[in-house]
Length: 625
Image (cartoon, rainbow, N blue to C red):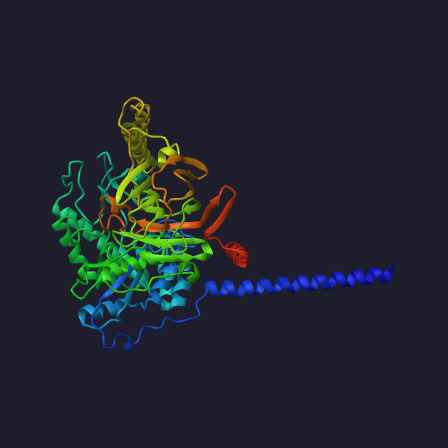
């Protein structure tokens, strides 16, 4: 019995040793990964003179991100998506240039590389520095971090402080710029023309969903009353704006020991340096006194020699943009022939791309069809040319404002086809015979979801209640808070007419940023069509006349392509996102034939699951260390 116990103990101890060794190995690997994530061991290598040899002047493009976080949530881009954007630019031949390069380009005629990029991150968030650093190192890119000067005084933990900015600059991957002294709003009206006056960023964010475009930034105009009449004289306006620049100068000198040379005047696209000529002149005086350059506009990426160094433009990529979206916008601005990202070559090869750009993201089981600017994207399935009775399952993840379309029984010219699509949050079924278009079905998806429809009067009351609640919360004194409280209580007693009372319904404008997510299941058999959305029937055995066999195609388009929209207020490129697309040919009542399956299979599916679990483990260690 003693020998048995001894052998058992020996095996148990060996098992413990092996277990400890495995745990130590795992911890060592994690430690190496974490150290590499958190510390900088490389130095930025600038482009060389040979990169500028024998080229014609092509200017430079400027991109500005709102900020970066781990997973990304509008407007902050996720770290992985940021890497995809910048890696695509790196593969296209882009190199980053510095503030000094910009000055030398405009002031001394210095040549720049043919594909030059100025990279900016606005608002000076701490998470931006954390989650962008490794991307900059890996791609040898340099960026400029912008910040509002007042953040130094408030010491908000979400934003970088002077000593942290100086440490970033020492890494050589960052330089420092400024968004100005403060972010504040004046002359604010809600969408019902109720005057809200001056608002802080917190106040503004609380009422933002009830606002139109009637507001301005602190430096852009006179402070005005509800009738548009200035509440301040010229001298008072001049003193107010000048004081903001003086504060900016003081806080940067105190915190950094210098004033950054790069300035981004908020808000952009004002025509000059403000919405009023006299206001503009004051801004122009100070910016030329204090800064070497100013990015005054947003929407377009390209800056050329003929541009003014104080009137530069930048493009602000959104968190939901895929890499080809960025490339498409830059290509439209520069007219340069940029290479688009294809992703999985085998999956990409299954499609005949007619227009736009197609990325097969096999790890996400997704096809991303990026439309041309102010146009569409179109791709035909190569092996789906003679399908008649089919069923399709797909999850549509493109934003609500835009077009994601599936063509069935289609010829190459789309003169004969059946189409099922989402356009600006509405489901459509149409068919075309010999070029003649016919709408068979239309359904507003808010109604399908059973969303409550407010009347205009009810929505106006909500807007006014939110404004009063906000002013009560941020009142400068207890007495003012009491006044707003009493007004709010009176407002709550009002009983506006509803839609059922005959009042006009309020139809909200669709935001270009609003995320879409619809599981769509389509069944086409003989002359009947059935469509289910998120497991609920939306179209039940709809009669169709186009019953001939044909091809299968995907289409995407900017939401304004079928209506009106304005550049700089809305993006004119769109990413149609088709996840887990499965197409099955119905040969008979009991026989099916797979046509296309965009899901991962076998070992690839297992590998994806393992990688996801490893990343989750790594994140847990980083979050809890």
